[in-house]
Amino acid sequence: MDETKSLKQYCREAKKRLKQGFWQNYSQNLDKELAKAESLGVSTSKVKEYYTCKITENIKNSKDEFEEFYKKVKTLLDAEGEVSNAIGRLTDKEHFDSLPYDERQRYTLNLSEKYLRAVERYKKEKALQITE
Image 1: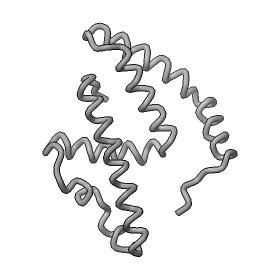
Image 2 (image 1 turned 90 degrees about the horizontal axis):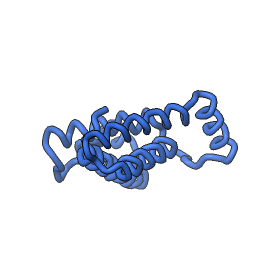
Image 3 (image 1 turned 90 degrees about the vertical axis):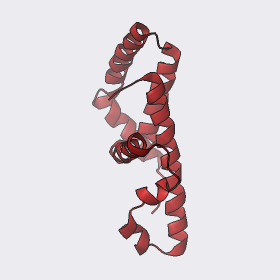
Image 4 (image 1 turned 120 degrees about the vertical axis):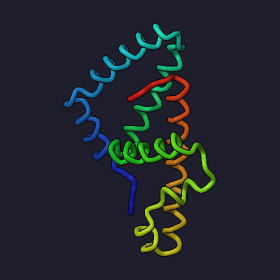
């Protein structure tokens, strides 16, 4: 369960983003969102900050994995708000039960970290009224 990446792996990921036009799409999407924010009277600096954090998060984590997790958190927050047992509800019970004690602790800490990032993103999106 080694999550560290080598410099070579980071370079491959960066090259892949360049080939797929990731940064061009990012620039176009940011321009659209800034125009939308200006028309709604939302601070453009907050929109820029939100997208910078979102891009950093996507590069840092596997985008699909975090997006799937974020959707679960968003559904939970929309339905019930912040609940005291959110980590328990988001835990993959079968996977958790198969882990030894120290790995369970690590799993729970990683899950809580992802949950906090997802809640922070959710709050930023609600404040900016961004719907995706």
